[in-house]
Image (cartoon, rainbow, N blue to C red; front, top):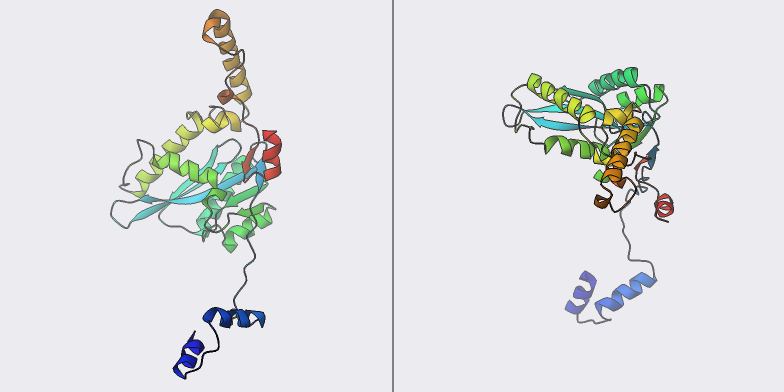
Length: 261
């Protein structure tokens, strides 16, 4: 554009701006002159869990403290198949060392998983955490940058916690925050009827008790159908009560199409 303008100032017209650019393009002269770093596209994490203990996902969320600007960090890890919270710690700060302490405790109680998934936070991608998982031969999986859907189970868990009626606006102390999280974990694991797992509790699915509960439910419904057949349009149990199948993070397209067919 500057050449075009300077030529006009000198009383010379060679062609329009579009002609200039066409000729430059034909001679491969219109391109980025700087050496730009080329980042390969991030691989989409595709994980599946067909039973408890296979894939765990974790994240850290902030809990507002007693004054503005003061926060506590809640570390929480969940089994994606059963939705069971296998561990939850609250600390005054975030660090990879604290994350490793939580993982060692969890693995000691629930066993070593096949995969641990997380987003790309500082603690999640730290060498400290990577070294622990590598030593235990656990596959590390990470979300793509700025893609929250790659860690849906942790995101959903935090939403359930923070949108609940008992979640306070602020916590008076670290002890109060820990007490609340302990109560929430007990409720979520043992009392919350989770819609994603057939309205079973996470504990029943995690410890493989859900089949017995489902059988009892089915017997109750069968008795009700026999007693009041006019109240039922179908002779089958509601789909919302079905036992959970495989749990996915980013189910591959071909699998989705097969299920639809």
